[in-house]
Image (cartoon, helix red, strand yellow):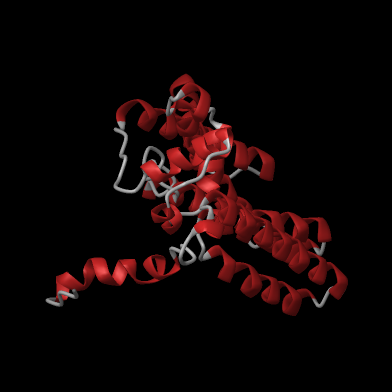
Length: 264
């Protein structure tokens, strides 16, 4: 009996519980163990262009301006650098811990997105998420990918919760998460109106709440554009620096060589 008990205890971690909170806690524990493993075994990756984010964080803290060449990036990830204390400590430990927390939470968000449809399917999809290693792949990749994945998934999870419950608090939380996603990558600006429209069609709720969320997003986008105007010193630039074209065409430009095309 003792042998059976010893086997059953760890096996229980791979089976859903009757309590949603217990199941979410088990997934978070497994994800934390995997996260800690990669924190100690994975190497850092500082890809080309990553330096713009550390410089951007420094510029925000010290009130300086940036070279217009940095306009290809977005300002959300530098805020995470500031949250991690980089401008003062000049250490990547803080940002690494922030991205590690996102890795754990992404697994839980996958579970919470599906749990109202099927607790068992939600739990096994959470395990599949861990096995795929997708939450941990970019954990020590010092670029905006991990944060973009997290806030996009958080936006969808909150929107699903709103559609299931009809609580407008979730709609406002979805809006703030979508704002964060748009700060990480410009594509988030396209995600918000599409998902807000889906939410309205699915619930047919009071339109004033949807208009209020649209206004919040528009104000946040306006404030962000003002920030870019100031930090890139646009009033003294011959043309408005922007990274939209590079963000849209970069992937095509990068991989066209694989099919024999070599653009100038």
